[in-house]
Image (tube, rainbow, N blue to C red):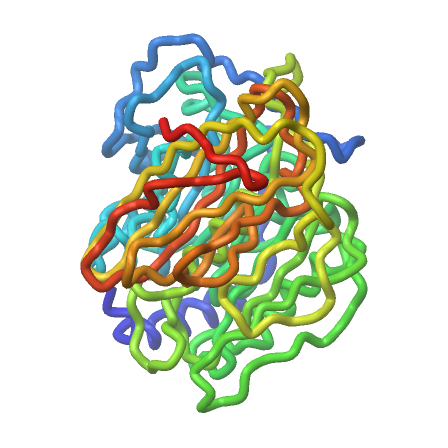
Length: 452
């Protein structure tokens, strides 16, 4: 990705944009204040339609200019299923193509590593910035985002409570601008090594926010990332605190989930001992999209937000239920929300399907759990044995212990209830020494499951 080669140009652009002052941003999609912490998947106009859009490069005329962007639609797309949608903005002198392909790191790093983790559950968009940046002059990049989103949702079935934005460096600045100006359109943002370079029109309403920043970032000082974070600490009603950050030379990262935030509006801060990069590796000064912890943590942050799968007529996203985040920081890249106290209820009858995506010495595994019993489960615990040589490095939608051998995955606060016929999806990222197979047996609350 030639990250270090662009440090100087990023810094120059930062000074140029900051000198121009605050940008004027448009809000053509409109904004309404969420009135409930219950998210309902509103049907977009594209639901039920045979799409005319296809995966690949696209163009659109917006603000009087022809702009390009890349669309990735899940394999086996179902036009009756509302999908999660993620905008992934490139960095200064980066391109939509590099975001889409993963650049020199390959497909494991496509869309900052989230495409592989999504396992065909998500629509991805990589917009192309003017002059390979996000100056957002007169709000044109926000209007570009609005127009692409409107086109996609008129063509494809999108869950309007599951729109997300993310990006590194200048792309992080653009994601922050989205959080400020589109707080009721986008459910959450992840800002990697960002600063206020693309403006902040509004910036007074809550948005679920994750910030990631190197403690000795030589391009955009970590103080700039902290400033972005603190805006949403305030907006989201979180308890102000000074998160613990790793010492220089420790080659580790520390993740802090703020306490006291409004339900559905968590703020998470991930500081790492490193420079200006979206793909730091614990224990090393090198960077690698295949080995970084950031992709798993951002995926976990985005997928914590649940919604009612039944579409409603309303097109506006609402907040979704979320556990109150812990105020204590974690030095582990696999921190997860706290599980419910103890499983109870239900007969334990279950069906499990597992899908593995493997590469070199890594893999991700997505597990779908269905309650096939006649009564509801109030808390669940899924046990399985990993093949020899596999070790879990991070996971989402469950807590995992231990990291190898016979593993127990326990529900977290927002997915512990499974009605008869109800399903939930969990997943994890792992290393392997050659055996990338999936477990051959699963048990839910001690009862063997059918494997689909």
